[in-house]
Length: 540
Image (cartoon, rainbow, N blue to C red; front, side):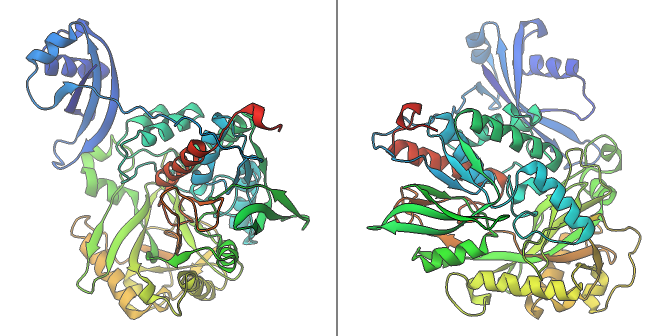
């Protein structure tokens, strides 16, 4: 096939115009085009008077060699695909199926590939299946009664289940893992458009269905799940993993599961598990992350700023990405931006408040929201040790809980700068899931972090007019942007304790759905290269 890049068309173009544009670029007649496949679609809004879609498209034509020979311009070339290849399995025998601890994106994709290649993994998840989890989370938002094991952070699908479902990543992908993740999502119910959109997303409503369908496929391949089950300890013999101590979170029953291989895909909020691993002698270290507040603006304001008023009437809700490097050495940037989305109470521990953002697939909420966060390093954390960042997070979340008397505290940006409690919303109201109230968020951070946040807001207004408007709504605290801990692993992806593979965002090796899923794939590949899979090795 022939690949055409930088193919620009008006945002209102028809399919016929699209085919004509392809024919013109290749200097062929439209009837010579036998098929085409869109590889990438993005929006070029640099000129608000002429906003366009820009495509990369692969095309099959008659006499392909001749067409390529006479083609002009660097934007036309032979199409080259990177096809994902799962490695051939090794020769060592596993006495028990591998165990994957955690069913977020990292654990899910690790388990999926292992199951597909005959390893029959056991997935242990401390929370509930996504169908039950959804009901419990919605009840928490309405009644403010938290289940510490099933919430926005814990449960099937991980924290990404209640998010925008963004699938873009900055990870360099030379082995086709990125496309493989998208293909698997599509196979299990995600829209096909995610395979070519420059900034793909699924939306929390569709993502829940996809996760459920992936679980059913894993089970059909011989994998199995233990929900509502927490791994409380790991037992070793001669430095080798022998078994996992587990507890059913509903009944309290404790028991052991024999295994010599466990994948730690525990997520960034498994603080009790981090403490257990530290006690068990795992090599761990505190790492930098970022903290801040979730900020809401009217989505129409963002649309107009990004696309212009005319194009905004045609295009979907606009995203944005903003960054600033301050003179004090801090970085300030947007994170997990949710067009047409909702702020959500994402707490997972009693007496603490943490927030996040989510969007449904249509992104049709009236507000845009994003975390605006400030970088923090281990030097900012009180005390020392691998869990110093965890303590830093908990202190912020405890203070946010107190500022909101158990509800999500909110404040208008103008009042935040002035150190004044807000009494009412301005020209628009909050789109938030969970009980909320006005609180003194200006008391939450150190003066340096607060000032850095404000400087960032004003700098971002130079790019997005109105970003620092006085009635922008702040909600706090955004503290779970990434793991505060890294569980050290070697080049074979194994920890310093034999048989245990740290994986994904919680282990400190990913940041978002796609990078976590791809890290899970790497772990599955490493296991497969070492061990022998296949149904004949053990009975389910």
